[in-house]
Every structure is written in C-alpha cells, then in structure tokens.
Length: 312
Image (tube, rainbow, N blue to C red; front, side):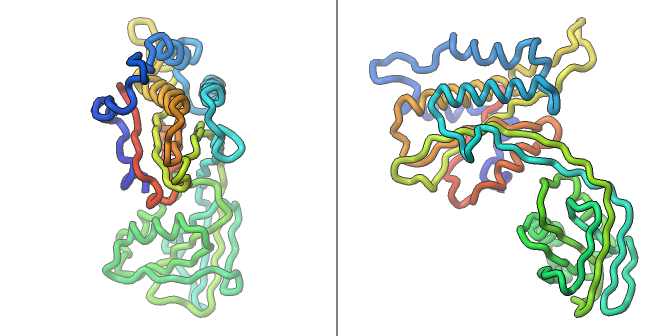
C-alpha cells in the first residue's frame, strides 16, 4: 500500500508546491502565508546541535516528537486517535526452535517458519486457525506477505515446488509490528486434516512513535489527503571537520517544517472538503518503519493523494 500510493520517499515536493501555488501560496490580500522567520524557527529547533541528530530511541527524538505535537496542537489540528503520538512497537524475534506434525508425519524444522510475537507458540487443528495453500505457480512472496500481514491466525501450506525459496520467507520477521495474530508457513504437499505446530523465539520489542494530526473534512471526511515527512535522522557519528553531530537539516527537518507550515496554512483557510492528515514519521533512516506502520492504518482506496516532503 505504501509503495502503491505514497512512493515519494527521497523526492522533493517542490514541483507539487509550484503547481499548487495559485491555490494556496498566497493569502487573499496577496501576502505570503509561508513566512521565512516561521520556517527558520521550526527548522532551527529540529536541526539544532541540542537535538543531537534525532536518532531513533534517543531522548532527543522524543523531544522532537513532543515539539511537533505541540506545533500541531497550536495550529489547531486534532489528534488522530486521542493522541498526536501514533505509538507502535517493532518486534524482532530471534528463532530458537520449531516442530510440526501433519496427519501424523513429522515436518523438518527447516520447513517451518512462524511469524509470531509470542515467545512460545503452540497451535493445532482445534486452535481456530484459517488454513490456506499457496499452490505451485503462485507469486510466493506476494501471497506470503498478504497472509503475514493479515488479521487472522493462519496456517499457510506452501507447495513443495517452492522448496528452494521457502527459506526467504523468514525475512518477513525483519519488519514486524506487535500483533496478537500468528502466521505459520509449512512446506508440504497438501493441506493437513490433523496438524500441530510449536515454535520458540526470543522476542525483542522496540517502541516508536509517529506524530500525526488531522483536519477533518467538511463533506468527504472519509477521504484523505496526506502531507508527510520523517523527523528522525542518524544521530552522532564520525566527526566531519571536527563536528560529530549529524543535524539532518535537509534530511528531513526541512520536510517536517514543511508539513507543520502546511498544517498552519490549511487550518487558517479552513475550507478542506476532504480530511487532511499531517504525519511526521519516525525510523525512516533505520528501515522506514514509521511510514510502513502509518500506511497500514489506512484503506488505500480512501487515500486520494499523498505528498511526502524531503530535501526541499
């Protein structure tokens, strides 16, 4: 969904802003509504040495999130779900062991991949799991992602014609968000009648937060236009000319500044028919986790347009 509807990461919104200039760059009296001093105030805070590069999991990125939330509130945006912080948890499971039985026959461990946030998973035919087959000739990766990101516990039997690529499904564990649903992939010839699966993982959880505010639409509240940018950067690293703080002014305090100023503008004119969503993503530099989580909260058919702002 994110790639299909919002594939604007690492691109500039400048062209879009120029095309839209006639409709929103100027106030009724002809005065620019985007003031240099206001842009400087926002970007200077986000990219200051005090923020130490806004690295994920640092105290400074929390300070940046609080600042953006305060700007949304001051602009008059509403929180999306009772809070401007869209909190989520990344789960990194470390595999320990797995076993399974199909109709009395043991399954080799290499032919079992459990996508789970549970340290110990046990399931069988009485556990209420959906049971599906990925048949020969199907798009294995696409089908597997669909089931792994679903909202139902599912046993997915993968046809043995995929034996050489089956192990690649373990990569689905690299971008997991905390969930109560489980998906178990088993390489086998057919769907079983009687089955059981056990899997053991060491679970590591990491908490993160996007910052999201909305302006509800007047006549089309369930249709969305989204402005976004990421507010994290890479923190402190190897010194360059004696400076070890990677401030991230253009990557992407600039885009975040643009999002905040657009929020101020659209609230000021207050004539949006569709709901406008303003999102500051976390963890872009460490895997795009914030944008992935954000995109999964929307039905893409309801997203009319999205502008991701970076390096402007």
